[in-house]
Length: 150
Image (cartoon, rainbow, N blue to C red; front, side, top):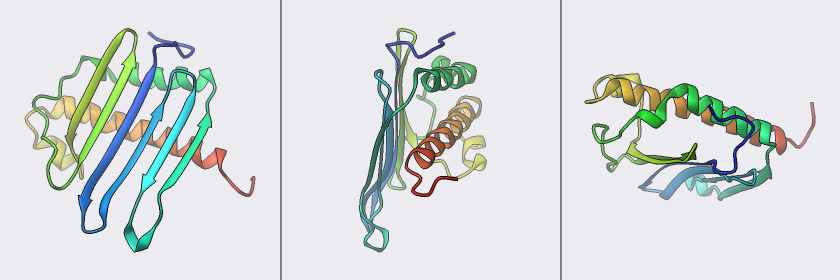
């Protein structure tokens, strides 16, 4: 089990589509040096691209590693998952414990989509892992860039 933020850790998540407002996407990555990079490109109502960068402590990287390790996602394969389509795509790339995995699938609307897939158990693990990681990353970004402290 990885702990304390090993130097070979890298995480990248992307979800996006090309539609009537152009290329809209959300992407974040955690680099081995602790840099967290977040980008949200929404053209809805002429919104602008949001870019945020901050550094996170090795303890936070260790927690991300624990979440990933507990999910057992490194044992999964995306070959039976729905392929990216016109609705959109999501990608998850992880480098951890001398393993490098990269998943690519379509956007998942709900657990109904997961249960109707050819690999519901594997896709369910991916679905919940992504929710957990997004929750942590959004909390970190929200706390770090909060204009008025609590």
